[in-house]
Image (cartoon, rainbow, N blue to C red; front, side, top):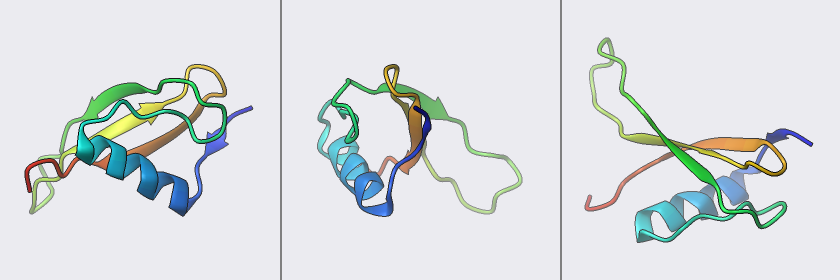
Length: 69
């Protein structure tokens, strides 16, 4: 199965990232792989994002990394 997470699931994933915890897939429980998403130069602001990918069920989500701020 592949797809995305609900808004509530993405919110919980973002909270886990912010807390420095190892995020797990809300759908199947697997540890999520993390990839940094580099900000685009043409944006007037810098946003640090992380792409979380489930190696088991292939769901994914990009969440803001707001650690320390």
